[in-house]
Image 1: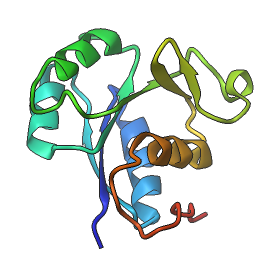
Image 2 (image 1 turned 90 degrees about the vertical axis):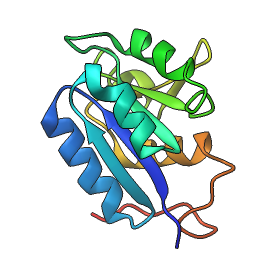
Image 3 (image 1 turned 90 degrees about the horizontal axis):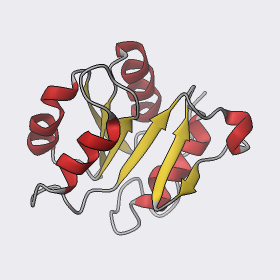
Image 4 (image 1 turned 120 degrees about the horizontal axis):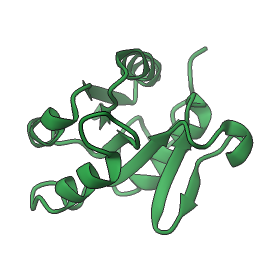
Length: 138
């Protein structure tokens, strides 16, 4: 069974590790991680993700600048980017993901159900995990 390829770019290893484990437990995703923004573009080129989860605030370069670099790369311009942010809380988003100004945001700490729904909604042409949305394993 083909799995959707998700790349997580976040400067906090605990965030990438926890999110990776939780997504992979569903059986529907292969997850790559990168904790250094300066290596993120190369990691995305090598991993060829179906979707990128990108931290908004990183010390080396901010998420918006990195998203612009990724989207200007011909091999990656079609890859959806979802921003992970601690600026919003689950309370702000009602425990769901949020779309504003053409961008998609998921609040930290990440609600796994909302994240899976966001991934599925933003990768409609990619088949993985069968016809139904993957169910989180608790």
